[in-house]
Image (cartoon, rainbow, N blue to C red):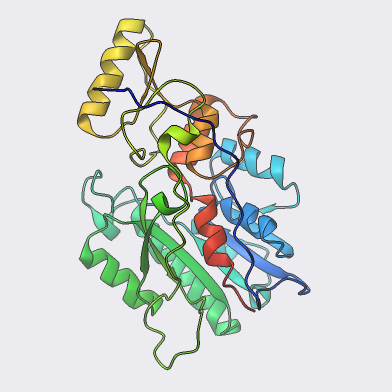
Length: 313
């Protein structure tokens, strides 16, 4: 490895300008967030000035719930998505449903089980919830996200069930990491007789480089590889073993590392937050491993802001 690129510190990620016609000034919306994770969707609504009356979060990770409630204590936790019929929600009042259904069985680094896998098959529960909401409120809006390496077969199945084909956007346009994702939504930017494709445009390239977001040291690439849930954790205790571990993971292609004082290191908590477009202190209440798990498994904040900036209700 030739880690000789100098670094510079970055400013916090910019928030995109809210487009005319978005829901500012409205009486507020009611949101159901499935697979809520660290609550990126709630933060995006807040950053865009979109008033949220009730935000129902379906999440089971204790530290994800801890972080969500830390930033937004008014979030209503409803628990496991598989128990959705028991939730105390007026479904006819729901204006927006967000879903980042599990990608583990769909990803190219997974076992290839696809939508039949134990985790990724939870997508079908989201479809049941969405269809039920549509039966009560045909105007309900939704956003579904999943990994860009999903097979054409699985993408086709998801698209047919949702009634719309996705837009494919890489978070590298708005952050310092390569994060290829599909986004399905019935949010529309223009009137059309054919609503078969998600028409959210590609965001403007902000030109954020990896060297811009590290707090110290040097890097050997322009952008980080995709931050994944298991990026932090299971690292050996001895210094020599840590170096071997990191070198092997870089050679395997699943890690990006920083060279500091002639030693390799993983991203720290601040850098991981920056890779997903969050403020430096967003995960301060979490451990390094917990933050890595949520950030690696979560949505890119500036991407969700970009999509929601086209929302009209």
